[in-house]
Image (tube, rainbow, N blue to C red; front, side, top):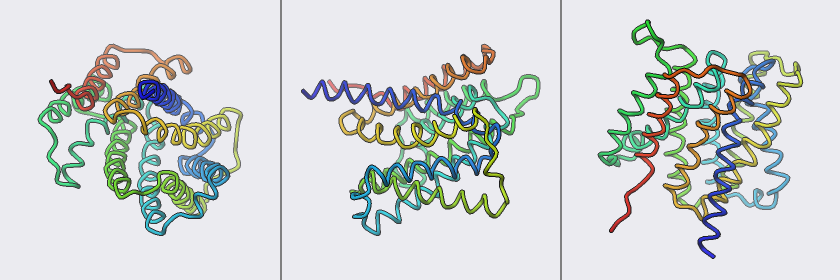
Length: 290
C-alpha cells in the first residue's frame, strides 16, 4: 500500500513538472498583449478565487499568524515572478526554463546565509557545475562575459525564488496549513500586482486568443492545480525524490518551447542544460546508507 501511494505521488509530481514546463510557453503567450504586472494580477486573482471556491470553509478558519506568513510569501513570489516575466520579454522560454532552475543549486547556499546551516561539501561542487552550465546557456559567444538582460533577470528570479523556498520551509515547519498559507500568498500577490497596474496605468483589457490562453493556463493549471498537486504529492514522496521530479520542469520547458516556437537547439544550450541538470542531481539525490 505504501509503495502504491509513493508511486501515485511520483506520478502526480511528474504531472506538476509537466504543467510547470508548459508554463514557460504560457508566460510568453500571455506577454504578447499584456505587461508582466497585468499577467501576475490575472494569474493570482484567478488562483485566489478558485482557492476560495474549493476551500472556503478551510480558509475562513485561518489563524492570523498563518495569514501574515502567507502574505510575506506572496510578496516574495510576486517579486520573483515579476522579474521572471520581465526577463522572458528579452530571452526565449527554452533558455529561461533552464536558467530559472538555478534555484535548486542556490538553495543550500541561501539557507546557509539565512538559517546559518552550512551546506554539505557536494553543494559547493554542484554550484560550480551549475555556474558552468549557466555560462554556456546565457553568456554570448564572442562577447566575453556579456550576458543578455533577459538572462540576468532570469537568474535574479532564481535567487529570489530560492529565498522564498527557504522561508516557506521555515513557515511550514511551524505547522502552517498549506492551503491557508497558499490562499493568502495568492491574495497578497494579486493585490500588490493590481496596485502596480493601477498606479502605472497599465492596460488590462487588450487580449488576443493567444494571450488569453496563456493567462488561463497560468491561473488555473500552473498556479492553482499545480500547487494542490505538489502538496498532495509531497505528502507521500521523499523530499529528495520530489525535488528531483519537480526540477524536470526545465526539461519539459525546453522541449515544449522547441516544439511550440520551433526554436533552434545549439550545442551550448544542450551542454549547459546537461550541466545544470547534473547540479540538480548532485544536490537532490542522496546516497543510501548501508
